[in-house]
Image (cartoon, rainbow, N blue to C red; front, side, top):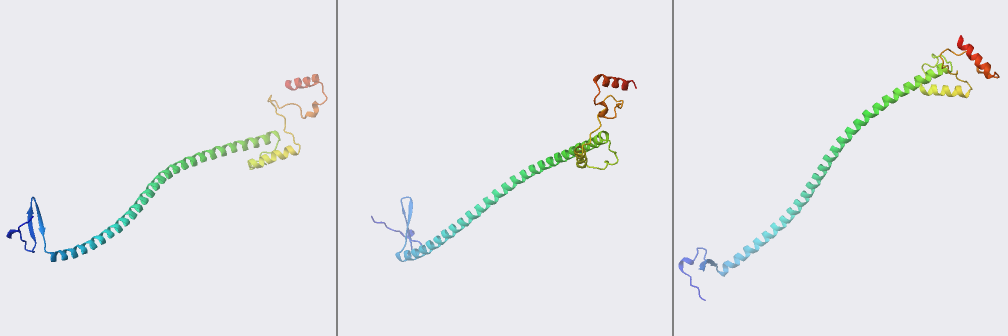
Length: 190
């Protein structure tokens, strides 16, 4: 197959452009083809360098992206911990309030118990109230234990409110039930 070129097919650079069907094919001189090959080789080197640079940039991007993801994860964890910290802080506040209430209640109970023990020692062991006025609960408990160890006996309770008539339990020893009843009857008449 022979292709003939016409004057309009010659380009200023010395190449020939011929229309084959719907496509245009460009023919160049062989001497120009060598120059194109050298330029192509230079371009291939440049493309190779650019691909290497792109690979390095992609690696750096991936590392930075990983760092960014780690920072985001740490930030999310920090926010979660901060929310939990706020919850714990609220709970600590509630517990502090509860402990304060328990201390107040405990102090009130200790005060009541101290007053009760002070009254008990004053009434039952006939201890002067001024002598035990400044004693703490522990001191009062120690005093009561000491009194019991020494054999001191508390005064018997007087439930009828009349003060009783017997000065000691020894007066009742050896008496018959009828004599005791008679003594009791005589005491109630007074």
